[in-house]
Image (cartoon, rainbow, N blue to C red; front, side, top):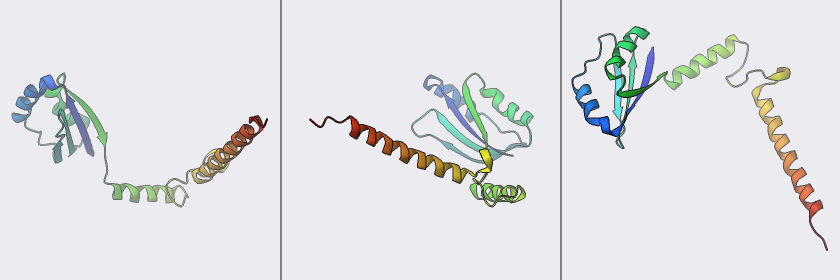
Length: 136
């Protein structure tokens, strides 16, 4: 599974983080795809692959209490779109975003209804304003 970590730390801890990272070795069970640092400071981004949560937990343990980790499962966009299309077809739909809402309406139909309601509200507000206008 591909994961992305956003790792942040307090400015006062920068030296500690740099020293720890300089001596840190990733587990053989973690395949690093790429790493970036935020040039404005105190943040690193890592995309990596791992098989299980135990490997993940062991990898962040040395940094716990010093850094904050936000971890997200990620997938390349083209692969996700292919998967979404397959899942939609399997569910009997033509494309992603056509999920059924209340009354069997697709999300596109619901958005169109919302847009129509917004237009009606604008007309009513305008009409109400015209009626309240002082014509003396």
